[in-house]
Length: 254
Image (cartoon, rainbow, N blue to C red; front, top):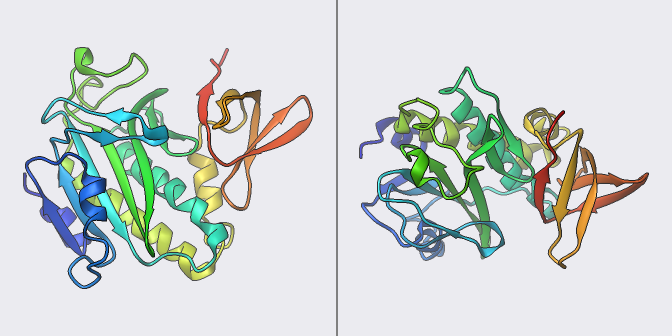
């Protein structure tokens, strides 16, 4: 695989034929600040033991999906802004996908799944490692319908599109770096423009949702807005709940 446009954006781009987990492999390099600077990327089309959010497994047939892990070192000074890192990634990836699927509805399901026409085409996992963050993304590229892991998933191929992988990765990296640089410089999601950008792309807002929380309980309510720290606000019978982590299911729109 050749990625000249992505290589021009990344500070370092390593494309490997196979990886058990690009996030785990990149975390192993995080202590090497000189060799693996900010915006270093590890990329493969054959990830054999990947993980998604809530420790779910993420495995795709070889050559049918891209696993992209990015090492982030230029982070916001305020800890409160860290919740926006994966949200920024979701918007950047949604923008990159939308650029090649212009006739489809592309958006983000909070916190960071990218949906096309309501079905998941990629997911994102952020992991802290020392003073850095490793941001992993899995994008369904040439996966056929019978290879999709669940009925609620999709891929470029299923949508009848041949993805330009180099352009996709380059667009994603450029958008991600720009959004995080603005967040780090301005210090908050409003001044940097990130909260409006995420809110515009977020398909979860202004609809009824079920949110499975880490403690096993479930919220049934309406997602109304994003808090300053990136938490989702869910209105349940007039009482607002702030959700920092959870598995969101969108109710069908009538």
